[in-house]
Amino acid sequence: MKTMRMMAVAAAAFCAAGAVQAQEPLKIGMITTLSGPGGYLGQDIRDAFQLAIDMQGGKLGGVPVQVLVEDDGLKPGQGKQISEKFMKTDKVKLLTGIVFSNVALAVVPDVLEDGGIYVSPNAGPSNLAGKECHANYYVVSWQNDSLHESAGSNANNLGYKKAFILAPNYPAGKDALEGFKRAFKGEVIGEVFTKLDQNDFAAEIAQIRAAKPDFIFQFHPGGAGIAFLRQYQQAGLLDTVPMVVPSPSMDAVTLKAIGEAAVGVNVSAQWNNDLDNAANKAFVEAWKKKYNDRPITYYASQGYDTALAIGAALKGTGGKVDDAKAFRTAMLKADFASVRGNFKFGNNQHPVQDWYSMKVVKGDGGAPIIKTMGKISSNTGDFYAKDCKL
Image (cartoon, rainbow, N blue to C red; front, side, top):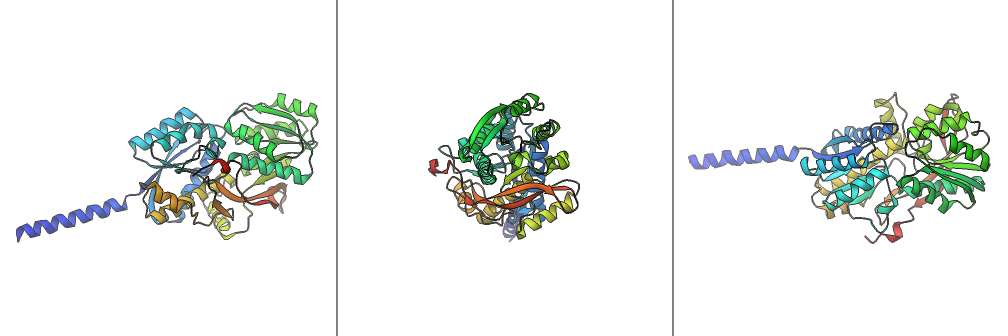
C-alpha cells in the first residue's frame, strides 16, 4: 500500500513537472539594428512584433513565446556572434529580426546550416531567393529587387524617360539598382553607389544637377535617407528634379523629419497606413494606442506581419519547431490576415503580393502625409523565384 502511495505521489509530481514544462514559452531570437542612424528601423520591427504578441495575450498562435532581442549595430560580425549565442547557449531554433542585407548574409547561412529556422521581417537579398533558397528560410517583407522594380514601374506609369539612380554600396543597394533597371523602360543617364550610412551627399547632388535627368531614383534607408533628402531639398533640386523612391527612402519617420519639403515625392510600397482592410485598421489603431508619440512605418507593418506568420505556423504545429518539415507545411499556408491585404508565399518562400503607388501630399490638416494613389501590380512575386528548386 505504501509503495502504491509513493508511486501515485511520484506520478503526480511527474505530471505537475510536465505541466510546468509545457507552459514554458517558446524562445524566439531577434537580431536587429537598434543603434546608429538606422536604429529606428529595428526598433519598429521589434516593437510591432511584440505588439502582435501583446494583442494575443503573450502568445502567438496560442503558444506562449518569449522574444530575446539583441542589437547587431549594423555589423555583420556582431550579428553572427549573436546568432551563435542564441542557438548554442540559449538553445533558440527560430530566429528573426535582421534589417540590413549585409548582416543577413553573414548570419542566415550559418543559422540554416546549424538546423535553425529564419523568418525575415525586412532583408531579402537576391542571393537567398534563387538557387540558394532554403526550406528553412522565409521572407515576409519582400525580395530586395521587387521593392525597386515597383519603383521602376511607377516611374514608367508617371511618364518619366531619363533617370539618375543612387543606392549604397552593399547587397541591398546593388539589388536596388538592378531591380529598378529591370523594370524601368527609359534611359539611365547616371548611376552612383554611395557609402553605407553616408551623411554628406554634396558630390552626388552636384552630379545630378549636371546630368539634368527627368527624375532621380534613390534608395537610402534610415538616417542616410533623411540626410539625402534634406540636402537635396536645400540644393533646390526637389522642386526641379522629381523623385521616385521605394518606401525605405520615404517612410513616416523620414517624412516627419523633412516635413512639407517632401510634398510631391512619388513612393511605391506594399503597405501604407491608409490601406482599407480590417487587419490593417486593427494594427494601426493598436500602434497608435501604444506608441502615440511615434509615426508608424512600413518596418513596423512587416514586424507585425512576421509575428502573425510565425503565429500561424506555431498554431499549425502545436508550438513545436523541432520538426522543420511540419513547421514549413504550416508556415507556407500563410494562414493569417496580413495588414497589406493579399499575401501568400511563392515557391521560394518569398512574398507574392500587391504593390501600390503613393505620393506625399498635404493632408486635411495641412501636414504632409503619404497617400495611396493606386495599384501598380497585383499578386507579384520576384525575379529569382524561377531559379529556386524547393
